Length: 201
Image 1 (cartoon, rainbow, N blue to C red):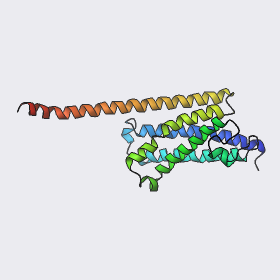
Image 2 (spheres, rainbow, N blue to C red):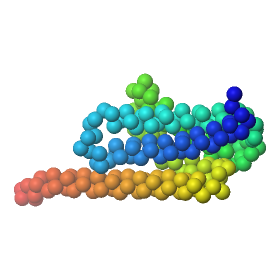
Image 3 (tube, rainbow, N blue to C red):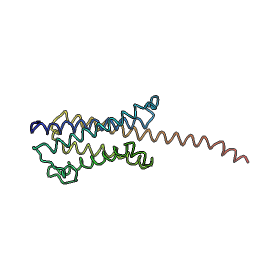
Image 4 (cartoon, helix red, strand yellow):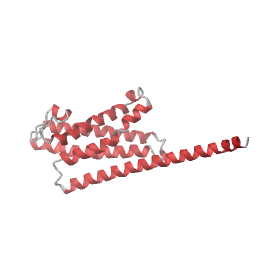
């Protein structure tokens, strides 16, 4: 049997680990969508690693929720962890976590092969882009609901994860802009001979 305080420590530790895994899965997913890992991009294990990190994130989120419900220090029931603003303890902060949970579930379910095969690429991509707001929702939840906000190591870890996320988002945006410019340049170069031949007639 886990001592009463043990459940609280379980929920705190698994929540932090879930956040780290989420950032890792997000980072790896972004790298896969850019040219940074192009030399080995066709390797099947790269996508498998991304999926494994995402699945492991879900496992630790589940453990986080189990620890919250089983703990007696702050009383959480099923409504508190599944219904926005149902928690009596820091309702706004907990609601960020509830929203994050639903975003994570939507992303993971859409990435499950039997479900993904039934979705159009555009719809799957739209759902997968929810990973961007998911990071910020989780950051808000961790910063507002975390009982370790007075712990310097916790704060440093949270700031570091946010910094990595910001860097990856900026990198993805810049990479997308660069790709768009290259495509426009190719289109222009491809059309120039045709335009010249048409003007000479």
